[in-house]
Image 1 (cartoon, rainbow, N blue to C red):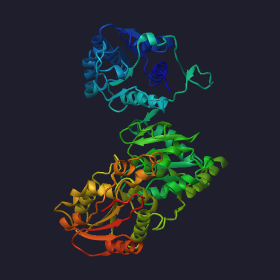
Image 2: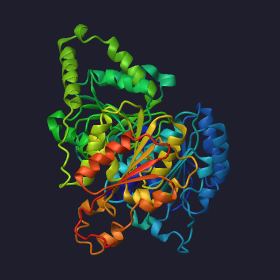
Image 3: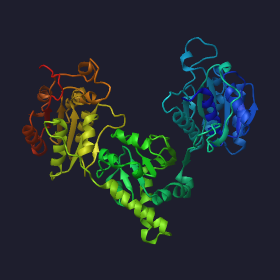
Length: 563
């Protein structure tokens, strides 16, 4: 666990690493450990100013006189923080990077009539570019603290620049050791006296294209096991074609919700042993359906990883990001491909470079090789077998279609069996609500056939989506009804829960026949393997002016619901 003195040591080290050379120090006991650490370490110059209102403007003047260099102002808890607000507002309007560091009471004492205590978290949000609260838990505490501090400091000095707020909950000064200071060097010697911290960098191509080329693009292309990793991201057909060309030079790993030619991630991850893990990764986009990917890459050692984000947001999903490239993913992909196709492997400057490029090409083939898992049979898992059969039949359709999946197990199966077409899914927040409505809205604006695959909870939660005047014959719904949240029956640790069925997985006896009847939606039902196959063929090929729904009903758990 990161104890409070280590929190202060990390803050001191990262302030200096991100260019803060001057700190305006306001008196107080709660912030005393912070100021003591900064002063004793000695590399940042402290200016004592008693009045916090004046201190904020004093910091503003220091920064302006030095070409808008970041300057910190450190205050104690309570109304002291509010007194810097006028200067922070001025800095916000003038884009001056003032770093407000406020000591605070521990969270358990907020709102308990403890002296010099207000609700400090977010109190300056309307006039800062970023605010963070350094509250930690035991798991991943050091990474979380580093990420939060660096997000704030990078926001202060990037783009338009501006003030930021770092709130630091601390115990009483009497409980804090004032003697422990920090070496601003990383713990290379492993002596325990210095910190094992890593400064994140923000590269902005508008002003430093050469840096991006030298720090990210060329090292990626020169790596032996390079990987371009794409989370949930909307990419048009042109960019997806560029990815296909890039995949001949490096591993391009995504899911069908992002890239229509995405490899199956679970089988791929099973093949990525320690010797085949990537050595250089560029990650862009949002979350992944496959949770195994997060775990495997977070455990990788010796891997350099850079994040590409249009807004420069710090998203360190794998807890090892070296920095962020502030550029649109599409622009980065185009630049990367242009550089890759400019460098001919046959004309490498050395044998070592030629071997590295040959290794990268073989690694790309390894990661692209489809290793389709055998779909379970109807008797083993009827709903998963249904999705596999649907995707197999879609390959033979001669019309243009768009496939939507609801969250939870449906989209996981979709990513496992779909290949050659993109999946649509509400993966921004990953909730079950609105999946049917989104598909209905899409179908209302698209000439293509829209196929929605949804579980029962997602469907019944959003059944009012069919109470809509804009439904047409291009909408087809495959409803996988196992009468409850089936995914909860698979979560380890929930097996002994006495209320697993009725409370946790929300077991129910509902079916969709009545909903379809009242909304003039064609209804099909399947409860066997043969009925499922005939139903899917009908669902995909029937010519009709009204929507159609095929309900696959399968009780795959022991406690069947009585009708």
